[in-house]
Length: 393
Image (cartoon, rainbow, N blue to C red):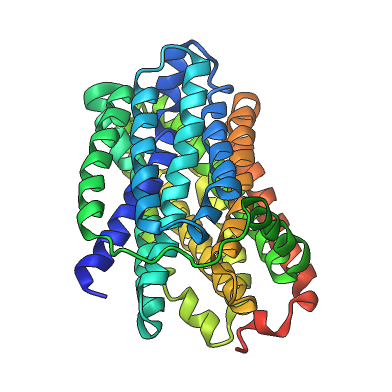
């Protein structure tokens, strides 16, 4: 696959996933504009994550049935309309409905592009191509906060979604010209049967169950931090702009990209060791994060550790799950990401509610508790992991 096409897959996946996370540094502005409390503002993120879950259940499996290029372009057009609807929302209900659609279509695009890249790559280069596309997802997820904060300071929160709708139109033109055409599957399962097969995987695959639960707890901790961070930094004594708050995503991107070798370590049979170290780092990261009001330097250290640990766990999870069942990658990634969406949604609600009652110290205690639960769960389930999940392919 030409490097230019690999770069297009990575950029497209990053731009698609960013739509799901633009709201996180804008919660205070949304609360003020729609007259809702800061504690209730977390519902905006929860609506987006609910859309993610719906996409994983009902849209992502369509990649096994439809011609992928056509599916991507249709979903991109619908995503553009959803972004315009959010930018024009005049009530909290309309905002939540629009955010749900953005979460659905942004997630469907992201996971669909990963599957597209995998199917378009040759056997000898699949890991490189999929790894690059996943790298685009990580960068897009983290830098979404930077872009949202910068645009919001200039044009308000509505400007963020208008700008993204414009970017999606440009992306549509690029994908229309660049994406390779693929043959439509010769035999099709009924849609209901296709969906049911995902639940069968959830019921039968122990590796998916265990690593999915770890992912749920890890992403819940991740969401607790990023959803609540805007609340103390936008108020006294910091009074940071959205641009400054979003810039912390740059720190997180550095930490996440440093975890890129986690997949290599999993291939060498070190998956469980990598997971254990990463989970310990996840717990430890909340100590410097709790020092926010002492020094911003501690916050930077904590963000690096949090994102390094989280991405290492995520990459290792995917390596183990795909190794356990090589015959169903699309359905596996859809089922696995259901855990991710659930954890992110629960974290957003818990973070804003905890901050309203117990402040930043309460948020850090909650995040540390969830991270510790993930570490304990991993240790308790080690003996039940199949041999293939230990990296012995």
